[in-house]
Length: 133
Image (cartoon, rainbow, N blue to C red; front, side, top):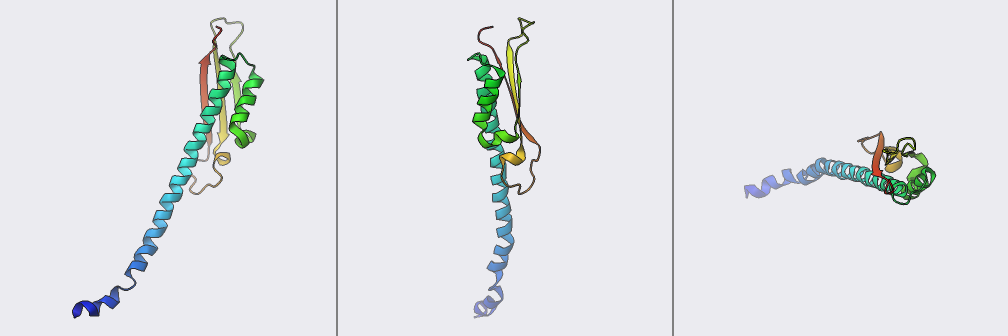
């Protein structure tokens, strides 16, 4: 009989536990979502740099063509991106490396800044040797 008498005192326990646990679970989920957007953005920037440097190294393109390729791959993120193309020095025949560096502000990668994990630039640098060197 005593078991039924004390049951009334535990009625709101589940509600209190849920009120404590739910915000923590939501914080964890939103934090993981923000980090995954950053990682996805890093992959996009790296892919764009790799495609752009390939235009220079394999297709013997120009710096303008490489910038256009990177902008195409970045899509809407390209408006805030800084794309730097380094071509070989014609005076130095041993210099056959081409390099593309892309810097995109993290704010243009992720639409919402829940926790401010990262507020700098997301960068990628890719270097390749020209095929005809």
